[in-house]
Length: 328
Image 1 (cartoon, rainbow, N blue to C red):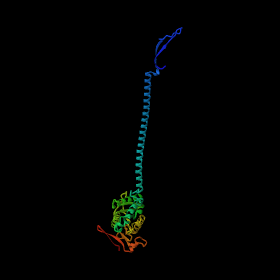
Image 2 (image 1 turned 90 degrees about the horizontal axis):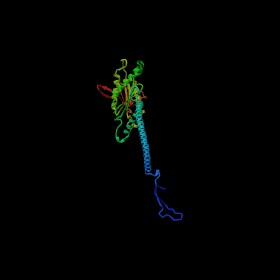
Image 3 (image 1 turned 45 degrees about the vertical axis):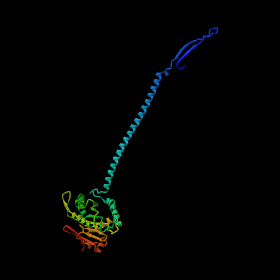
Image 4 (image 1 turned 30 degrees about the vertical axis):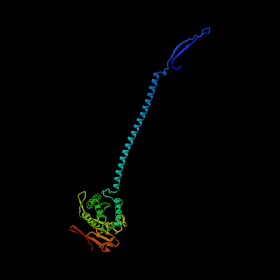
């Protein structure tokens, strides 16, 4: 029976078959099973609550672990990202140093030949675009934007052979200092190789090129260079230079190789007499240092046509003034 209150009624009959109408009423109380008692249900509720709490705690613990794991991952990613960024910065610095070293001469620290072909080519392209613009109305013969000077020491090999390579290296460093002092900060000073240097005067009017060449020539010739042992030596240089653009109205017709080759040829012309310079201000217009023997110019020389047309000028120094006069 289910739990609750019941009444057991009993009626009986005697042997004569007469029933007792009142019968017997016996009240009976059926108590609930232990698992149906209020305290059992309380326990059930408590167990469910504890189970829910346990599940909640497990879920919260899993969430916390996942959050901690995510945070740890974020921290590791941030740390690795920071290390990677730092490594990238280091690599960039190394690449910059490598790039700088690849564009610099290891002995003198000056720019090298590669720098000229990579960077100066951009200057020539800019100048070519400027002069190609017909609306600009600029005459290339009136304003040279770049002067390319090839400089060669006249007696470096005997010095190197006599005093040793260390003395030769010291002389190259001293020549570097002379060139840096003679040039502007915007100019490029390059060690071309061996005892050859290049000066690239930027945004320079062609009339200024003679003064710069004479300044470099005279400062090297007049200076006594001290070796490590205190001994003094002297040397001179030969310079060939080209004012760019050289071709009137056609700046784009001359590329960097043309300019370099022409300056090199002019330098060798100057080297025939030593301690001299020769420059081309235009395709048929040349200028030389004082005392340069224009009659010695070979017919195969780039100066021959200028000499034939009477357009070789000699640079004369009078006091502190300089002027150019027709040679001869």
